[in-house]
Picture: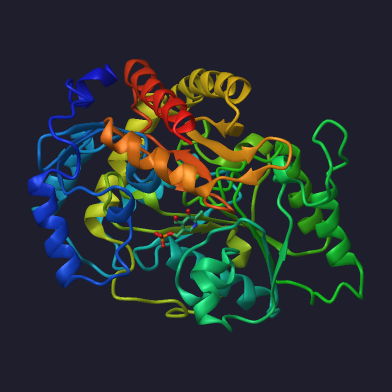
Length: 454
Ligand SMILES: Cc1ncc(COP(=O)(O)O)c(C=O)c1O
């Protein structure tokens, strides 16, 4: 398929500096009537009229290149015609069925099982958000092992419900709500740019993975034997942190050796984002459980799912329930999206285009004083800003200015990271090389200009 047809041709087009007057009306209404917890419009102040492919149009007619992709939801592109057709057909047939089977659910189950490694042959559809998949996986791990503790990683993000939040490391998200679940322990991730052990990737001996082993092995580590270890194969909100593949392989080995279940959270990194259908495939491992959501709903229909090994399916009916146990329109959209990914070799496209973009960003890292590290896998890319390359003093204010200026110049990006100093790209995977180049040029110009004005 020619991906050029999927996006608005005029992008980027800035008619009026955002937020324009129409967007502003919506934003004003929102801030008077909605909670102050609303957050994205603070970083990207606009109201959205429509979106297509890898482009978004606001209420004032500005058209943006979208490197944000609805926080990693829009892998097949906004308003993907195949997905929209499938969803529209489904809407006129059946839209809600709790967990009673139906043709749309059957089709999604079949395609998911054909894409997952064969040992992961059971699926569970719970509530509609990624967080709920994480809750379900936690419960299933505890139910099977009869053990309470869990291990997660520094830099992790697994969601906002209490269990998922307990497994997320960011203090900013959780400090007002403590205590959350007890016996959740955090160990260092392979964040090589800021190695917790002060090592360099060239000369390290995977001290981070070894530390997990130490925690499990040493009776005085203070960590009770866990039910599960949960890990993102590439960390998203933590700042697009790409570990060496062997880190994930090692975690798998350690979990097997200590009979601890391994949950891989693919909610953000899954569905072709990193150049494979699932990010754990880079490490050639099979997790015990996999959590999925975001791109699984095709173009933003809410759905989540846990895949796991049959022998773990020991829980009785009703052990994790909710009114929305899956979503019939999302099944149809998800099935169409997965078909689209396979038919269009979206993983390969993400891998190739990601390499091109990363090469460009790596040049920026060399040339710019403020870019500490550019990194990524496939179309999950991150640029970490630091005020000083030697001390790696984080530059969150700079990242915010860059996001705001990119927005004003027609490019949507996200920021995240341990210190909120990482520009993050999660574009729809149907991004063309032309849009990718235009977007990167805007980004590079903005970084240079903001840097000069410091
Ligand atoms: C890796 C990961 N897990 C879980 C979640 C939570 O998903 P949701 O926001 O749909 O609850 C997210 C959301 O960004 C995520 O990136």
